[in-house]
Image 1 (cartoon, rainbow, N blue to C red):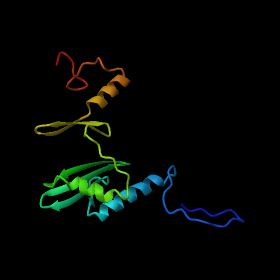
Image 2: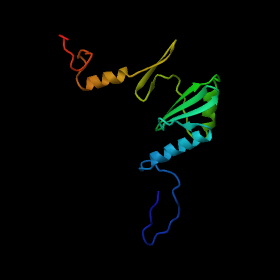
Image 3: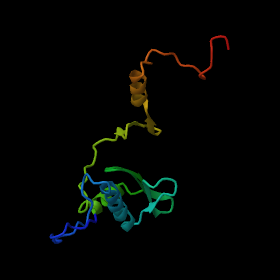
Image 4: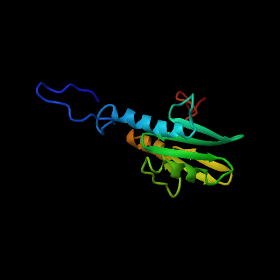
Amino acid sequence: LSAQPPPGFKVVGEVKRGLPGLRQSGRSWHQEQERRLLERGFKVCAAASCIYVKEVGKGEYLIVGVFVDDWIVLNLTSNPDAVKKLVASLGPHFEIKMAASFERFLGAQFESRPDGIFMHLAQYVRGVLERFGMTDCRPASSPGASKDE
């Protein structure tokens, strides 16, 4: 934040961090999170700047997805405590709350199944259909499909 004081006033302090509510506060927050992850060996994904990847062994990765102040961490390593170690190292810098279960993230729903994790947007889609009054519509293979085709 940079501003010139009015005539007759002198500067007694300087703001070194983004203040909540200012335009740059979101950028400052993102830069702080990114700095802390990069310090721990994560690299920014080339395809999406909100994804951070750290290779911890041959074919073993920790992946962090960041959306404002919500994080999702995928532990693709043989060490079940890898996420706990990451959280412990970030604890002094951020207030971290671990979710007891992983069911929802940014509107998407997740289900644990024997063959892996299934992600879907069923609740979101139902909400969109309700909002536009289309809950009783019948599905079609294409927008122009008719009964005769």
